Image (tube, rainbow, N blue to C red; front, side):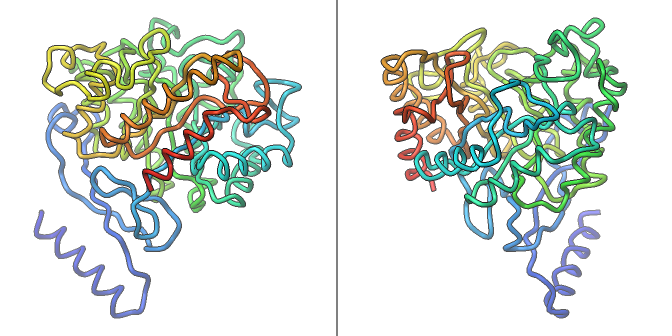
Length: 405
């Protein structure tokens, strides 16, 4: 089989060279089938897929991301309601106009060095996959200022989704959403999550402004499958197959906290992100049940703990263990959310160097990106990064971005 694959790859390369076709970059991934314990936990089985060089799509190579032949590392920000329109906003009355969205992204890029924006692309924002104006405007603004975007396709905690009041996916019928609930419409949704993902991904399959797809925001669950693996292994395998059936170009991440929250922390982090179909490992640096101000929670100062330490074999291992375990997966890891409370100007000034220390520690430990929570124009939950008063965190973001090109 290995010989046949090698011959096929050589034939593809030779065909491209002789026909004057585009140069290609070979992306190595592994394959595993749902329900196969060995495939989900063993080493990588090689297969290939090709992306045109200089296509504008972000690809991966080992633990690095690549963009047009160059290493791509990023500092970014969350603007979760960026795709809000008159049709739907998670914060009615506070949504940004198209002009304000463009101004915000330009400020993020120019003053904060941000090159990635993470935002919600749930069914609520697209009328069940029938209206894409909200996502379109985010892509258009990002493209104009030179940023990539990371759309998130559903919310684990249940905010801004198709059920009111908000209810976490883990509370669905005895924590069965990740095994059964995602296959049927949830709340007032028009589509099941499974069908919605395929719809929205197919619509944007050829859009290079999208860095990749995040299946979930904070997919936390204690549920396990018959092989005693986290149920997210089966869920991610199925959803990745749906995505890959219509989109072979964009990167995939599951979208977990991996900071002690159950489902993808400690050994479960390895089980979930060791799946061949998943390109990027994601963590959120909130500590467990609240903000942790240390540079590398669970580690020593800014250094992650040892991957085989007693702490890291626990299913509630802190985020530092995810950094340590990611090395063995040979996959890129990024921080999708991180924040420290700062409601007053003095508190925001004090937190800026603390978050700078977190960013520095993450990149030193091998992270390829750090996306801070959350850009706003006014105080909401106290973790806001304010555009309106020149939050000192922007200068720290810019400095980190310059140090990690």
